[in-house]
Length: 605
Image 1 (cartoon, rainbow, N blue to C red):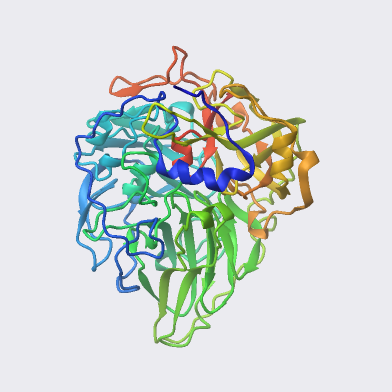
Image 2 (image 1 turned 135 degrees about the vertical axis):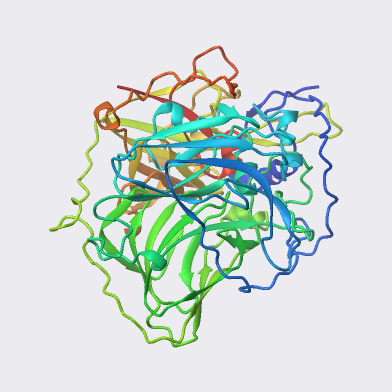
Protein backbone atom coordinates (compact mmCIF):
# COMPACT_ATOMS: atom_id res chain seq x y z
CA UNK A 1 0.00 0.00 0.00
CA UNK A 2 1.28 3.46 -0.88
CA UNK A 3 -0.03 6.70 0.52
CA UNK A 4 0.73 9.72 -1.64
CA UNK A 5 2.85 12.63 -0.51
CA UNK A 6 0.91 15.40 1.16
CA UNK A 7 1.50 18.54 3.14
CA UNK A 8 2.40 18.12 6.79
CA UNK A 9 2.45 21.44 8.59
CA UNK A 10 1.64 23.37 11.72
CA UNK A 11 2.27 22.70 15.35
CA UNK A 12 3.47 19.12 14.85
CA UNK A 13 6.73 20.34 13.38
CA UNK A 14 8.99 19.37 16.23
CA UNK A 15 7.66 15.81 16.34
CA UNK A 16 7.84 15.51 12.57
CA UNK A 17 11.45 16.58 12.66
CA UNK A 18 12.34 13.44 14.55
CA UNK A 19 11.12 11.40 11.62
CA UNK A 20 12.87 13.76 9.23
CA UNK A 21 16.17 13.08 10.93
CA UNK A 22 15.61 9.38 11.19
CA UNK A 23 14.17 8.31 7.88
CA UNK A 24 15.04 8.24 4.20
CA UNK A 25 14.78 11.35 2.08
CA UNK A 26 11.42 12.22 0.58
CA UNK A 27 12.73 12.41 -2.97
CA UNK A 28 12.75 8.64 -3.42
CA UNK A 29 9.80 6.91 -5.00
CA UNK A 30 7.81 5.16 -2.25
CA UNK A 31 9.36 1.82 -1.50
CA UNK A 32 12.22 2.28 -3.98
CA UNK A 33 15.27 0.22 -3.00
CA UNK A 34 18.42 2.12 -2.11
CA UNK A 35 21.60 0.59 -3.57
CA UNK A 36 24.13 -0.39 -0.90
CA UNK A 37 27.08 2.00 -0.87
CA UNK A 38 30.46 0.63 -1.89
CA UNK A 39 32.15 2.87 0.66
CA UNK A 40 32.27 1.22 4.11
CA UNK A 41 30.02 2.89 6.66
CA UNK A 42 31.84 3.52 9.94
CA UNK A 43 30.67 1.67 13.02
CA UNK A 44 28.61 3.73 15.44
CA UNK A 45 30.74 5.05 18.30
CA UNK A 46 29.35 4.63 21.81
CA UNK A 47 27.06 7.37 23.06
CA UNK A 48 29.12 9.73 25.23
CA UNK A 49 27.45 13.12 24.81
CA UNK A 50 24.73 14.92 26.75
CA UNK A 51 21.98 13.21 24.73
CA UNK A 52 21.92 9.44 24.09
CA UNK A 53 19.99 10.20 20.87
CA UNK A 54 22.84 12.16 19.30
CA UNK A 55 26.47 11.74 18.41
CA UNK A 56 29.15 13.58 20.37
CA UNK A 57 32.80 14.39 19.75
CA UNK A 58 35.46 12.98 22.05
CA UNK A 59 36.70 15.37 24.77
CA UNK A 60 39.17 17.90 23.34
CA UNK A 61 41.35 20.45 25.09
CA UNK A 62 40.47 24.00 24.20
CA UNK A 63 42.71 26.82 23.01
CA UNK A 64 45.91 24.82 22.56
CA UNK A 65 46.50 25.55 18.85
CA UNK A 66 47.24 28.93 17.30
CA UNK A 67 44.74 30.25 14.76
CA UNK A 68 46.15 29.62 11.28
CA UNK A 69 46.36 32.52 8.84
CA UNK A 70 45.03 31.23 5.54
CA UNK A 71 47.34 31.94 2.59
CA UNK A 72 46.44 34.91 0.39
CA UNK A 73 46.38 34.90 -3.40
CA UNK A 74 45.39 37.23 -6.21
CA UNK A 75 41.93 36.35 -7.50
CA UNK A 76 43.17 35.51 -11.00
CA UNK A 77 44.22 31.99 -10.11
CA UNK A 78 43.62 28.27 -10.60
CA UNK A 79 42.40 26.48 -7.48
CA UNK A 80 42.39 22.70 -7.27
CA UNK A 81 39.85 20.88 -5.12
CA UNK A 82 41.70 17.90 -3.75
CA UNK A 83 41.84 15.35 -0.97
CA UNK A 84 44.58 15.65 1.62
CA UNK A 85 45.36 14.87 5.24
CA UNK A 86 44.60 17.44 7.92
CA UNK A 87 44.68 17.53 11.72
CA UNK A 88 41.86 19.54 13.27
CA UNK A 89 43.21 19.24 16.82
CA UNK A 90 46.28 17.69 18.47
CA UNK A 91 44.01 15.36 20.45
CA UNK A 92 42.55 13.96 17.20
CA UNK A 93 44.31 11.73 14.66
CA UNK A 94 44.87 13.20 11.18
CA UNK A 95 42.03 12.64 8.75
CA UNK A 96 41.14 13.06 5.09
CA UNK A 97 39.58 16.41 4.17
CA UNK A 98 38.81 18.43 1.06
CA UNK A 99 40.25 21.81 0.23
CA UNK A 100 41.19 24.08 -2.64
CA UNK A 101 44.86 23.41 -1.86
CA UNK A 102 46.70 20.94 0.38
CA UNK A 103 44.72 21.00 3.59
CA UNK A 104 41.24 22.12 4.48
CA UNK A 105 39.48 25.22 3.03
CA UNK A 106 41.15 27.37 0.39
CA UNK A 107 43.34 30.45 0.09
CA UNK A 108 41.97 33.93 0.68
CA UNK A 109 41.50 35.51 -2.75
CA UNK A 110 41.93 39.27 -3.10
CA UNK A 111 40.27 41.11 -5.98
CA UNK A 112 39.93 44.80 -6.85
CA UNK A 113 36.85 46.77 -7.82
CA UNK A 114 36.55 47.15 -11.57
CA UNK A 115 39.30 44.63 -12.37
CA UNK A 116 37.76 41.46 -13.86
CA UNK A 117 39.26 38.14 -12.89
CA UNK A 118 38.94 34.51 -13.93
CA UNK A 119 39.17 31.81 -11.30
CA UNK A 120 39.54 28.27 -12.58
CA UNK A 121 38.41 25.51 -10.23
CA UNK A 122 39.85 22.07 -10.97
CA UNK A 123 38.25 18.95 -9.50
CA UNK A 124 41.07 16.58 -8.52
CA UNK A 125 39.32 14.86 -5.61
CA UNK A 126 40.49 11.26 -5.38
CA UNK A 127 39.06 10.36 -1.95
CA UNK A 128 35.67 11.61 -0.74
CA UNK A 129 35.87 11.59 3.08
CA UNK A 130 32.06 11.79 3.43
CA UNK A 131 31.18 9.64 0.44
CA UNK A 132 29.33 7.10 2.58
CA UNK A 133 26.90 9.88 3.63
CA UNK A 134 25.72 10.66 0.08
CA UNK A 135 21.93 10.31 -0.05
CA UNK A 136 21.22 8.38 -3.25
CA UNK A 137 17.50 9.17 -3.05
CA UNK A 138 18.07 12.88 -3.67
CA UNK A 139 17.81 14.25 -7.19
CA UNK A 140 21.16 14.36 -8.91
CA UNK A 141 22.95 12.12 -6.40
CA UNK A 142 24.46 8.94 -7.83
CA UNK A 143 26.55 6.04 -6.67
CA UNK A 144 29.54 7.68 -8.36
CA UNK A 145 29.30 10.66 -5.99
CA UNK A 146 30.60 8.43 -3.22
CA UNK A 147 34.00 8.06 -4.86
CA UNK A 148 34.02 10.74 -7.57
CA UNK A 149 31.97 13.65 -6.19
CA UNK A 150 30.52 16.41 -8.34
CA UNK A 151 31.58 19.98 -7.53
CA UNK A 152 30.64 23.48 -8.57
CA UNK A 153 31.69 26.77 -6.99
CA UNK A 154 29.47 29.73 -6.10
CA UNK A 155 30.97 33.12 -5.19
CA UNK A 156 28.58 33.99 -2.38
CA UNK A 157 27.54 37.64 -2.49
CA UNK A 158 28.72 38.47 -6.02
CA UNK A 159 26.38 39.38 -8.92
CA UNK A 160 27.98 36.86 -11.26
CA UNK A 161 26.96 36.13 -14.82
CA UNK A 162 24.79 33.00 -15.19
CA UNK A 163 27.57 30.71 -16.44
CA UNK A 164 29.88 31.73 -13.57
CA UNK A 165 27.47 31.67 -10.64
CA UNK A 166 27.90 27.99 -9.77
CA UNK A 167 24.48 26.77 -10.82
CA UNK A 168 23.79 23.61 -8.76
CA UNK A 169 22.64 21.63 -11.80
CA UNK A 170 25.91 22.03 -13.74
CA UNK A 171 28.77 20.23 -12.03
CA UNK A 172 32.24 18.81 -12.66
CA UNK A 173 33.71 15.47 -11.68
CA UNK A 174 37.37 14.47 -11.37
CA UNK A 175 39.40 16.07 -14.13
CA UNK A 176 36.83 18.78 -14.91
CA UNK A 177 37.69 22.49 -14.89
CA UNK A 178 35.14 25.18 -14.04
CA UNK A 179 36.15 28.63 -15.33
CA UNK A 180 34.31 31.42 -13.50
CA UNK A 181 34.58 35.00 -14.73
CA UNK A 182 33.99 37.71 -12.13
CA UNK A 183 33.51 41.37 -13.09
CA UNK A 184 34.19 42.59 -9.53
CA UNK A 185 31.98 45.60 -10.19
CA UNK A 186 30.58 45.96 -6.67
CA UNK A 187 32.03 47.88 -3.74
CA UNK A 188 34.58 46.43 -1.34
CA UNK A 189 33.05 43.60 0.68
CA UNK A 190 33.71 40.31 2.44
CA UNK A 191 32.60 37.54 0.07
CA UNK A 192 33.29 33.82 0.21
CA UNK A 193 33.38 30.97 -2.26
CA UNK A 194 32.05 27.50 -1.57
CA UNK A 195 30.74 24.38 -3.24
CA UNK A 196 27.15 24.43 -4.52
CA UNK A 197 26.59 21.00 -6.12
CA UNK A 198 23.01 19.78 -6.17
CA UNK A 199 22.31 17.28 -3.35
CA UNK A 200 25.92 17.26 -2.05
CA UNK A 201 26.59 20.86 -0.99
CA UNK A 202 26.26 20.02 2.70
CA UNK A 203 28.88 17.27 2.48
CA UNK A 204 31.36 19.07 0.22
CA UNK A 205 31.35 22.21 2.37
CA UNK A 206 31.55 20.20 5.58
CA UNK A 207 34.57 18.37 4.21
CA UNK A 208 36.32 21.70 3.52
CA UNK A 209 35.38 23.24 0.17
CA UNK A 210 35.14 26.93 1.13
CA UNK A 211 37.31 30.04 1.23
CA UNK A 212 37.44 33.85 1.54
CA UNK A 213 37.14 36.32 -1.34
CA UNK A 214 38.00 39.88 -0.25
CA UNK A 215 37.04 42.61 -2.69
CA UNK A 216 38.99 45.89 -2.34
CA UNK A 217 38.35 49.38 -3.71
CA UNK A 218 39.84 52.88 -3.46
CA UNK A 219 38.36 53.42 0.02
CA UNK A 220 39.06 49.98 1.47
CA UNK A 221 42.43 49.17 -0.03
CA UNK A 222 43.68 46.66 2.51
CA UNK A 223 46.81 48.78 2.98
CA UNK A 224 47.87 50.63 6.11
CA UNK A 225 47.29 54.03 4.45
CA UNK A 226 43.66 53.28 3.47
CA UNK A 227 41.44 56.40 3.54
CA UNK A 228 39.13 54.97 6.21
CA UNK A 229 41.94 54.38 8.67
CA UNK A 230 41.07 50.70 9.06
CA UNK A 231 43.52 48.19 10.52
CA UNK A 232 45.51 46.38 7.82
CA UNK A 233 48.27 43.81 7.41
CA UNK A 234 48.66 41.63 10.48
CA UNK A 235 45.82 43.55 12.15
CA UNK A 236 43.25 42.46 9.55
CA UNK A 237 42.25 38.86 10.26
CA UNK A 238 39.82 36.76 8.16
CA UNK A 239 38.05 34.31 10.46
CA UNK A 240 35.77 31.54 9.17
CA UNK A 241 33.65 29.95 11.91
CA UNK A 242 32.14 26.49 11.45
CA UNK A 243 30.80 23.86 13.83
CA UNK A 244 31.77 20.26 13.38
CA UNK A 245 31.29 16.84 14.99
CA UNK A 246 34.19 14.38 15.18
CA UNK A 247 34.64 10.68 15.72
CA UNK A 248 37.42 9.39 17.97
CA UNK A 249 39.51 8.47 14.91
CA UNK A 250 39.56 12.13 13.82
CA UNK A 251 37.05 11.73 10.98
CA UNK A 252 34.11 14.09 10.57
CA UNK A 253 30.74 12.84 11.79
CA UNK A 254 28.14 14.26 9.36
CA UNK A 255 25.09 13.13 11.33
CA UNK A 256 23.54 14.59 14.44
CA UNK A 257 21.07 11.86 15.44
CA UNK A 258 22.27 8.34 16.17
CA UNK A 259 18.91 6.87 15.12
CA UNK A 260 19.22 8.31 11.61
CA UNK A 261 20.14 5.58 9.11
CA UNK A 262 23.52 6.23 7.48
CA UNK A 263 23.41 7.45 3.92
CA UNK A 264 20.33 9.64 4.33
CA UNK A 265 19.95 13.38 4.61
CA UNK A 266 19.08 15.00 7.91
CA UNK A 267 17.48 18.25 9.02
CA UNK A 268 20.65 20.03 10.03
CA UNK A 269 24.31 19.52 10.84
CA UNK A 270 25.01 20.87 14.33
CA UNK A 271 28.49 20.18 15.65
CA UNK A 272 29.70 20.35 19.22
CA UNK A 273 33.19 21.62 18.34
CA UNK A 274 33.97 25.12 17.08
CA UNK A 275 36.31 25.03 14.09
CA UNK A 276 37.90 28.34 13.05
CA UNK A 277 40.01 28.55 9.88
CA UNK A 278 40.12 24.75 9.94
CA UNK A 279 41.32 24.35 13.55
CA UNK A 280 39.27 23.26 16.55
CA UNK A 281 38.98 25.86 19.34
CA UNK A 282 42.08 27.88 18.44
CA UNK A 283 43.77 30.70 20.30
CA UNK A 284 45.18 33.87 18.76
CA UNK A 285 47.96 35.98 20.28
CA UNK A 286 47.05 39.66 19.84
CA UNK A 287 48.71 42.97 20.51
CA UNK A 288 46.85 45.35 22.77
CA UNK A 289 45.46 47.44 19.96
CA UNK A 290 42.69 47.58 17.34
CA UNK A 291 42.05 44.63 14.99
CA UNK A 292 39.77 44.23 12.00
CA UNK A 293 38.03 40.84 12.03
CA UNK A 294 36.56 39.74 8.68
CA UNK A 295 34.07 37.17 9.96
CA UNK A 296 32.36 34.57 7.77
CA UNK A 297 29.71 32.42 9.44
CA UNK A 298 30.18 29.25 7.38
CA UNK A 299 28.45 26.61 9.50
CA UNK A 300 26.06 24.27 7.72
CA UNK A 301 23.02 25.00 9.89
CA UNK A 302 23.74 26.81 13.15
CA UNK A 303 22.87 30.42 14.04
CA UNK A 304 25.24 32.20 16.46
CA UNK A 305 25.02 35.14 18.84
CA UNK A 306 28.65 36.21 19.07
CA UNK A 307 29.93 38.13 22.10
CA UNK A 308 33.02 38.29 24.29
CA UNK A 309 33.33 36.46 27.60
CA UNK A 310 34.17 39.66 29.52
CA UNK A 311 31.27 41.58 28.01
CA UNK A 312 33.54 44.01 26.18
CA UNK A 313 32.03 45.94 23.32
CA UNK A 314 33.15 45.96 19.70
CA UNK A 315 32.26 47.81 16.52
CA UNK A 316 30.46 46.57 13.41
CA UNK A 317 31.52 48.52 10.32
CA UNK A 318 30.12 46.34 7.55
CA UNK A 319 28.00 43.37 6.53
CA UNK A 320 27.37 41.11 3.56
CA UNK A 321 27.61 43.74 0.82
CA UNK A 322 30.14 46.15 2.30
CA UNK A 323 30.42 49.10 4.66
CA UNK A 324 27.60 50.54 6.72
CA UNK A 325 26.93 54.28 6.75
CA UNK A 326 28.13 54.54 10.33
CA UNK A 327 29.87 52.34 12.87
CA UNK A 328 27.66 50.31 15.24
CA UNK A 329 28.83 49.91 18.83
CA UNK A 330 27.51 46.66 20.33
CA UNK A 331 28.23 43.85 22.77
CA UNK A 332 26.90 41.08 20.47
CA UNK A 333 25.97 40.24 16.88
CA UNK A 334 23.62 37.54 15.58
CA UNK A 335 24.79 35.73 12.46
CA UNK A 336 23.17 32.91 10.55
CA UNK A 337 24.74 30.54 8.02
CA UNK A 338 26.31 32.42 5.09
CA UNK A 339 26.35 35.90 6.65
CA UNK A 340 29.47 38.04 6.93
CA UNK A 341 30.41 40.77 9.40
CA UNK A 342 33.22 43.32 9.34
CA UNK A 343 34.25 43.98 12.95
CA UNK A 344 36.67 46.28 14.77
CA UNK A 345 37.80 44.78 18.07
CA UNK A 346 39.93 46.87 20.44
CA UNK A 347 42.12 44.73 22.70
CA UNK A 348 43.86 47.74 24.29
CA UNK A 349 41.69 47.50 27.42
CA UNK A 350 43.03 44.02 28.22
CA UNK A 351 45.77 43.78 30.82
CA UNK A 352 49.14 42.38 29.71
CA UNK A 353 48.74 38.61 29.41
CA UNK A 354 44.97 38.74 29.84
CA UNK A 355 42.76 36.52 27.66
CA UNK A 356 39.24 36.93 26.36
CA UNK A 357 37.06 34.33 24.65
CA UNK A 358 34.77 34.78 21.68
CA UNK A 359 31.58 33.07 22.85
CA UNK A 360 28.22 32.06 21.40
CA UNK A 361 25.21 32.92 23.57
CA UNK A 362 22.49 31.83 21.11
CA UNK A 363 19.69 29.65 22.44
CA UNK A 364 18.12 26.79 20.54
CA UNK A 365 14.86 27.35 18.73
CA UNK A 366 12.03 25.20 20.11
CA UNK A 367 12.49 22.68 17.30
CA UNK A 368 16.21 22.38 17.88
CA UNK A 369 15.62 22.05 21.62
CA UNK A 370 13.40 19.02 20.99
CA UNK A 371 16.22 17.51 18.95
CA UNK A 372 18.74 18.22 21.75
CA UNK A 373 21.00 20.20 19.41
CA UNK A 374 24.27 20.56 21.34
CA UNK A 375 25.27 23.93 22.73
CA UNK A 376 28.45 25.54 21.44
CA UNK A 377 29.28 28.24 24.00
CA UNK A 378 32.97 28.86 23.19
CA UNK A 379 34.51 29.64 19.79
CA UNK A 380 38.13 30.80 20.18
CA UNK A 381 40.40 32.69 22.59
CA UNK A 382 42.43 35.88 22.18
CA UNK A 383 45.59 36.23 24.31
CA UNK A 384 46.97 39.77 24.84
CA UNK A 385 50.72 40.28 24.76
CA UNK A 386 52.82 42.16 27.30
CA UNK A 387 53.47 45.26 25.19
CA UNK A 388 52.05 48.65 26.05
CA UNK A 389 48.54 49.32 24.79
CA UNK A 390 48.25 51.21 21.51
CA UNK A 391 44.78 52.77 21.21
CA UNK A 392 43.65 53.43 17.66
CA UNK A 393 40.67 55.69 16.85
CA UNK A 394 37.57 53.98 15.48
CA UNK A 395 35.94 55.78 12.55
CA UNK A 396 32.36 56.80 13.30
CA UNK A 397 31.31 57.84 9.80
CA UNK A 398 32.06 55.32 7.03
CA UNK A 399 30.03 56.80 4.15
CA UNK A 400 28.66 60.10 3.01
CA UNK A 401 31.51 62.48 3.85
CA UNK A 402 34.67 63.93 2.31
CA UNK A 403 36.99 61.17 1.15
CA UNK A 404 34.37 58.51 1.94
CA UNK A 405 32.20 56.36 -0.32
CA UNK A 406 28.70 57.70 -0.95
CA UNK A 407 26.01 57.07 1.64
CA UNK A 408 23.66 54.15 1.10
CA UNK A 409 20.82 55.55 -0.99
CA UNK A 410 17.22 55.06 0.15
CA UNK A 411 15.60 52.20 -1.74
CA UNK A 412 12.10 52.40 -3.16
CA UNK A 413 9.89 49.62 -4.44
CA UNK A 414 8.47 49.11 -7.92
CA UNK A 415 5.25 47.68 -6.53
CA UNK A 416 5.88 43.95 -6.92
CA UNK A 417 5.17 41.97 -3.75
CA UNK A 418 5.89 38.25 -3.36
CA UNK A 419 4.99 35.85 -0.56
CA UNK A 420 7.34 32.93 0.04
CA UNK A 421 6.28 30.05 2.30
CA UNK A 422 9.10 27.91 3.73
CA UNK A 423 7.80 24.62 5.00
CA UNK A 424 8.10 20.85 4.65
CA UNK A 425 6.31 17.95 2.99
CA UNK A 426 5.91 14.49 4.47
CA UNK A 427 5.49 11.10 2.86
CA UNK A 428 4.06 7.95 4.37
CA UNK A 429 5.30 4.69 2.92
CA UNK A 430 3.70 1.45 4.11
CA UNK A 431 5.77 -0.73 1.75
CA UNK A 432 8.62 -0.72 4.24
CA UNK A 433 8.66 -2.64 7.46
CA UNK A 434 7.17 0.42 9.13
CA UNK A 435 5.73 3.70 7.96
CA UNK A 436 8.32 6.45 7.73
CA UNK A 437 7.88 10.17 7.97
CA UNK A 438 10.68 11.93 6.14
CA UNK A 439 10.33 15.61 5.35
CA UNK A 440 11.30 17.52 2.25
CA UNK A 441 11.83 21.26 2.45
CA UNK A 442 9.86 23.27 -0.06
CA UNK A 443 9.10 26.87 -0.93
CA UNK A 444 5.46 27.68 -1.83
CA UNK A 445 4.77 23.92 -1.98
CA UNK A 446 7.04 23.67 -5.03
CA UNK A 447 10.08 21.44 -5.46
CA UNK A 448 13.26 22.83 -6.96
CA UNK A 449 12.61 21.04 -10.25
CA UNK A 450 9.40 22.93 -10.95
CA UNK A 451 8.06 24.40 -14.16
CA UNK A 452 6.31 27.12 -12.13
CA UNK A 453 9.30 29.48 -12.16
CA UNK A 454 9.13 33.09 -10.94
CA UNK A 455 10.32 35.88 -13.22
CA UNK A 456 11.80 39.18 -12.00
CA UNK A 457 12.62 42.30 -14.01
CA UNK A 458 16.24 43.47 -13.98
CA UNK A 459 16.63 46.93 -12.47
CA UNK A 460 13.54 46.70 -10.25
CA UNK A 461 13.00 46.49 -6.50
CA UNK A 462 10.43 44.16 -4.93
CA UNK A 463 8.95 43.45 -1.51
CA UNK A 464 9.34 39.86 -0.31
CA UNK A 465 7.51 38.39 2.67
CA UNK A 466 9.26 35.14 3.64
CA UNK A 467 7.04 33.04 5.90
CA UNK A 468 8.47 30.35 8.18
CA UNK A 469 5.78 27.93 9.38
CA UNK A 470 8.04 25.67 11.47
CA UNK A 471 9.84 26.01 14.82
CA UNK A 472 13.25 25.94 13.09
CA UNK A 473 15.22 28.92 11.80
CA UNK A 474 16.02 29.38 8.12
CA UNK A 475 18.90 31.44 6.75
CA UNK A 476 17.83 32.80 3.34
CA UNK A 477 20.30 33.63 0.54
CA UNK A 478 19.52 35.23 -2.83
CA UNK A 479 21.84 34.88 -5.80
CA UNK A 480 22.43 37.93 -8.04
CA UNK A 481 20.12 40.20 -6.01
CA UNK A 482 20.88 42.22 -2.92
CA UNK A 483 18.33 43.28 -0.32
CA UNK A 484 17.57 45.42 2.69
CA UNK A 485 15.95 43.92 5.78
CA UNK A 486 12.73 45.80 6.57
CA UNK A 487 11.76 43.83 9.66
CA UNK A 488 10.49 40.63 11.26
CA UNK A 489 7.16 39.73 12.83
CA UNK A 490 5.93 36.65 14.68
CA UNK A 491 3.29 34.46 13.08
CA UNK A 492 0.33 32.56 14.57
CA UNK A 493 1.20 29.49 12.57
CA UNK A 494 -1.72 27.30 13.67
CA UNK A 495 -4.27 29.90 12.61
CA UNK A 496 -2.45 30.61 9.37
CA UNK A 497 -2.36 26.95 8.38
CA UNK A 498 -5.94 26.26 9.44
CA UNK A 499 -7.30 29.19 7.44
CA UNK A 500 -5.89 28.00 4.14
CA UNK A 501 -5.10 24.31 3.96
CA UNK A 502 -2.20 23.53 1.63
CA UNK A 503 -2.76 21.40 -1.46
CA UNK A 504 -2.58 17.65 -0.90
CA UNK A 505 0.04 17.25 -3.61
CA UNK A 506 3.41 18.87 -4.07
CA UNK A 507 3.83 21.05 -7.15
CA UNK A 508 0.76 23.25 -6.76
CA UNK A 509 1.79 26.78 -5.80
CA UNK A 510 0.54 27.75 -2.35
CA UNK A 511 1.28 31.17 -0.85
CA UNK A 512 -1.58 32.59 1.26
CA UNK A 513 -1.27 36.09 2.72
CA UNK A 514 0.12 35.89 6.27
CA UNK A 515 -0.90 39.42 7.32
CA UNK A 516 -4.14 38.44 9.20
CA UNK A 517 -2.11 36.11 11.43
CA UNK A 518 0.80 38.33 12.38
CA UNK A 519 1.41 38.82 16.11
CA UNK A 520 2.54 42.03 17.76
CA UNK A 521 4.57 44.71 16.04
CA UNK A 522 7.13 44.25 13.33
CA UNK A 523 10.62 44.49 14.83
CA UNK A 524 13.10 46.66 12.98
CA UNK A 525 16.32 45.12 11.70
CA UNK A 526 19.29 45.15 14.04
CA UNK A 527 21.61 48.11 13.61
CA UNK A 528 24.27 45.92 11.98
CA UNK A 529 21.69 44.88 9.34
CA UNK A 530 21.24 48.45 8.08
CA UNK A 531 23.24 47.98 4.87
CA UNK A 532 22.73 45.93 1.74
CA UNK A 533 22.74 42.19 2.33
CA UNK A 534 22.36 38.89 0.50
CA UNK A 535 21.72 36.54 3.45
CA UNK A 536 19.40 36.95 6.44
CA UNK A 537 17.75 34.98 9.22
CA UNK A 538 14.09 33.95 9.07
CA UNK A 539 13.15 33.27 12.67
CA UNK A 540 10.98 30.33 13.64
CA UNK A 541 7.21 30.91 13.28
CA UNK A 542 7.79 34.36 11.84
CA UNK A 543 7.77 36.49 8.69
CA UNK A 544 10.87 38.23 7.35
CA UNK A 545 10.19 41.21 5.07
CA UNK A 546 12.84 42.23 2.55
CA UNK A 547 13.30 44.95 -0.04
CA UNK A 548 14.91 42.97 -2.89
CA UNK A 549 16.79 44.78 -5.67
CA UNK A 550 17.61 43.09 -8.97
CA UNK A 551 20.52 44.87 -10.69
CA UNK A 552 19.91 46.34 -14.13
CA UNK A 553 21.43 44.94 -17.30
CA UNK A 554 23.43 48.18 -17.63
CA UNK A 555 24.90 47.69 -14.14
CA UNK A 556 25.63 44.03 -14.79
CA UNK A 557 26.90 44.40 -18.36
CA UNK A 558 25.54 40.94 -19.19
CA UNK A 559 22.20 39.27 -19.85
CA UNK A 560 21.06 37.66 -16.58
CA UNK A 561 18.66 35.39 -18.49
CA UNK A 562 21.21 34.03 -20.96
CA UNK A 563 21.06 30.22 -21.31
CA UNK A 564 23.78 28.43 -19.37
CA UNK A 565 25.71 26.01 -21.55
CA UNK A 566 26.89 22.72 -20.12
CA UNK A 567 30.64 22.49 -20.90
CA UNK A 568 31.94 19.31 -22.48
CA UNK A 569 33.75 18.29 -19.28
CA UNK A 570 30.72 18.97 -17.03
CA UNK A 571 27.38 17.29 -16.46
CA UNK A 572 23.99 18.90 -16.26
CA UNK A 573 20.98 17.19 -14.77
CA UNK A 574 17.71 19.00 -14.45
CA UNK A 575 14.99 16.43 -15.01
CA UNK A 576 13.48 18.13 -18.05
CA UNK A 577 14.42 19.00 -21.61
CA UNK A 578 14.37 22.71 -20.85
CA UNK A 579 17.43 24.91 -21.11
CA UNK A 580 19.13 25.79 -17.85
CA UNK A 581 18.59 29.48 -17.20
CA UNK A 582 18.44 31.89 -14.34
CA UNK A 583 19.58 31.91 -10.74
CA UNK A 584 18.60 30.30 -7.47
CA UNK A 585 17.55 31.51 -4.06
CA UNK A 586 17.36 29.16 -1.14
CA UNK A 587 17.62 28.35 2.51
CA UNK A 588 21.30 28.45 3.47
CA UNK A 589 20.91 25.67 6.00
CA UNK A 590 22.84 23.42 3.64
CA UNK A 591 20.86 20.33 4.60
CA UNK A 592 17.64 22.19 3.72
CA UNK A 593 19.17 23.58 0.54
CA UNK A 594 20.14 20.12 -0.68
CA UNK A 595 16.60 18.82 -0.11
CA UNK A 596 14.71 20.77 -1.45
CA UNK A 597 14.35 24.27 -0.06
CA UNK A 598 15.71 26.03 -3.14
CA UNK A 599 13.90 27.78 -5.97
CA UNK A 600 14.89 28.96 -9.46
CA UNK A 601 14.17 32.50 -10.56
CA UNK A 602 14.69 34.06 -13.97
CA UNK A 603 15.66 37.71 -14.34
CA UNK A 604 14.67 39.36 -17.60
CA UNK A 605 16.34 42.49 -18.92
